[in-house]
Amino acid sequence: MIPIVTPDQMAAIDAAAPEGTDVLVARAGAAVALAARQMMGGTYGRRVLVAAGKGNNGADGRVAAAALERWGVRCRTETPPQALELVAAPNAGAPASSAWDLVIDAAYGTGLRGSWGAGQAPAVPVLAVDIPSGIDALTGVDHGCWPATATVTFGALKPGLLLHPGAAAAGEVQLARIGLNTSAAASWLVTDADANAALPVAEPTAHKWRRAVRVIAGSPQMRGAGHLVCAAAQRAGAGMVVVSSPGQRAADVARPAETVARDLRPGNWAEPSLEGIDRFDAAVIGPGIGTDPAASAQMARFISQCPIPLVADADALGAVADHPECLRERTAPTILTPHDGEFARLTGAAPAADRFDAVRQAASMLGAVVLLKGPTTLVAAGAEPHAESHQLTVLAVTSGNARLATAGSGDVLCGVIAAVLSGGPADPAGVASQVAAAAHWHGRTATVDGHDPAAVATPLTAMGQVDLLPAARAGLAACGPESSSA
Image: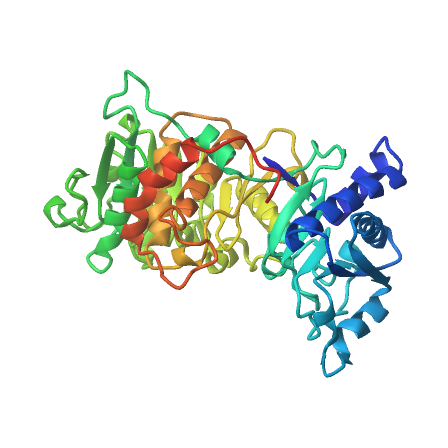
């Protein structure tokens, strides 16, 4: 996995490095120069403007400029205000930035808390050093930056490079490992290799009940929800899937042909739905059930009494918010999968700008694995032994894109998570790793069919995601060693 640290943590890591600042700056500057050379496709006849501030970020830029000059590049290094003038002011009737092949933003990096380049972005590619100046390295908030084509960051990723709008402003992020010890990081970016390692594989002696999933989802008004959960679980490896929709006869439950349906009569359906639950390895409850108080009470009862790993999504999250005691009574892992609105209902407040801290706090408060959905999905486990809330591990998933912003995507994710959990028991941190791997796998359906990850004009339907799960899994299995790029 790729480490993610806050600016304060990065400062502590820098201070603890056995090498001096000059050595680290030399390594960082060399990495920037190499990235610049690659971006320009060579050095002959190239011109580069370097905006270099007073701190270490500026020092990195000046070292990069010196290296580029040795390779034959004509560099001009200026302080941020002067560089801004060169970019913004007209020159012989044309924008000044057109005189350059590349602009290197080494102005402030993580040290800027305000605006400096808003509305005056260069007309040529920008290479940011560590993080685009003006992007909050903790939250990703844009206070006014030059949007970068690429960013070279050092030692570890920063949250602001993964959280939007900072993620978009950073462009392609390259991680330069300059000899810093980041092993104590509390947040990590999941790679293809990580997801592949965490996902279960079929055993030679497997049978249909080896990985069985129980689904309580759907209603007469939301028939498709249960169908999608079941289809995703089956495509993700569940050998047996049994579904019930509260208030419906088995014959009326929407489901794939291979799924078994059971009656679940109206009224007190929680206890009947738990019959034989010990035969299953994981369960899902919530999608499409409804939000009336009676349904909420039944869902809470099911949650409190379900003795196996459980994914609670959609309407079940409302049940948890209304009946928080149901979580305290559980003995098996619980996975909660809120979007921002559901997160606010569960915790009493919308996610803070520091989403990494927000998901940690929620997991600690709820005593559950919390998967906070978003352009960057964050997963935290709230039951790590001897860990304070600020020490809880957060796993970040960035494999998806806006193609997945379609109705039913959350139902598909639930089915994938349940199928992955059915691969066997694990400790809380292990469960969080499995959940993050499932989310990463699901995200990969957005790109496995050959679409450019940045091309989101064609939404991918929920059933389209289900159909692409096997191909996405094959892609993960074929992945090479962990890359140093984000």
